[in-house]
Length: 139
Image (tube, rainbow, N blue to C red; front, side, top):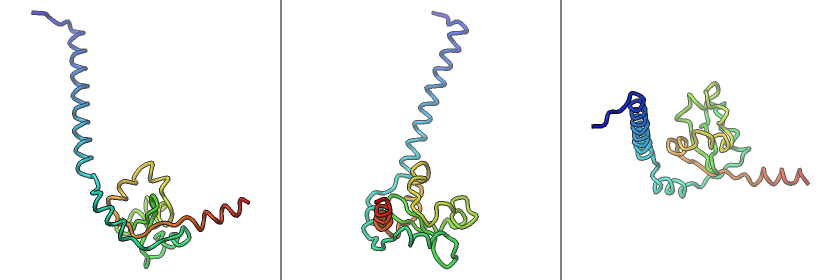
């Protein structure tokens, strides 16, 4: 029977630990993806039912500063009602800077999937009026 030296035992142990870590990470990632994967049929049904369209100017009213209005934010062309997370999106909340505007750029870095899964879409964002004003100003 072949005997392993102390150095070879250390290397084999480290390789086994690394393989075990990768397997563990793979299982956790698979679990998270399966548990929190949005139902695409439900999402497409929600999108089909949306008839309200907001401009960026209209969206500004829904930034949480008026307690009588819901709190909205826009992500990827849809407007989401995040009023249920009022403690986060109202003034003084950690994510108040996202409310009442198109937050797509910031939410693509982190958090966009959570918004899409957790909050209902209530409208579509129409950026055309603001973009046409910008184009006219650039001429």
